[in-house]
Length: 433
Image 1 (tube, one colour):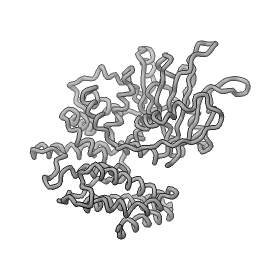
Image 2: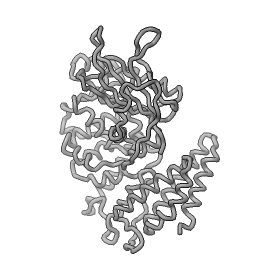
Image 3: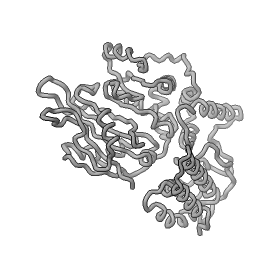
Image 4: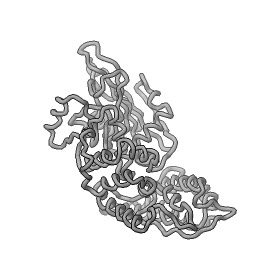
């Protein structure tokens, strides 16, 4: 399991005086990332909440291509000056690790908390060790989407998504609900787009910390101060006009699925893997999915309805959070087998998730991954029926093609990656018995 590096940004000695700096870090963090952590790190009086239990969850990219998921917590008050001291615990999360949690920092935060990682380095020494964060989740959280339909409701949620997609920096006035609203925005976006939305749930705005999404307190003076920045928009959910429909296709889609209880359809679409999808592509994808909803309503069926002879076949699609492309093969009529798992079986999802992890790591050159895949592939393939097995191979082939294209991009050749992908395909398309 890939390790996650750690760092602590807090008050520390410097040339005889105390200042905020990276006071501790594990050895695997590169210098550019350390400099970025220092640049984004919050100092005294940075938290909006001044209470003793104030905290903020933060997320932003790093020069290495990894991401920083951090928690800033209050650490009391200075003896002189009366300023609130803070401490920030940073996790340096590689892309592969973030993808295991649906590219959702809130989900990874909960997994880290469950492992006791956030509490493990209080008063840490100057040397930290990397940690492992076990587990994985899909890109779509149906219970959360269902709760968003009730609170804050389709109107506010669509308006927030609209503002988040349009703004370079969005400061949200939601009080204690701000974190839940930001989490709601991420849950309403495809997983590929989520890393584009850096955010902070409780830090005061600062030009040197250009979070895409942030919080703003109730102080009218602070809100007025933010208006001097041309790239900052202040959003207050309490002022949303329920009669004003969102303009862009993706927010319209969010409003429609929440208002009309099309959660299963939306979750299935969020679970599909779409390579190179970005925020700029959301309008086109939103129009496409709105057309799918229109067609299903005209046909008198729901978009997630399956033919009677192939129940719940779409569940196997959702498992491929890393590999699913834009187009899905038409479900075939496959009867249950005495020796294989059916496409509607809960066990098939676990098998497909396991395959995703092994194939993804193998094609990306993770040490020892190809050997694990060679050992596990015959056993896992025998547990799948013909349809999910064929679909899996197709999706892995599509991913390999993406790797080959990247190897040849801009004249840069990385033959070792292409060879690794070919080796994996030879295994997957060979005799699995």
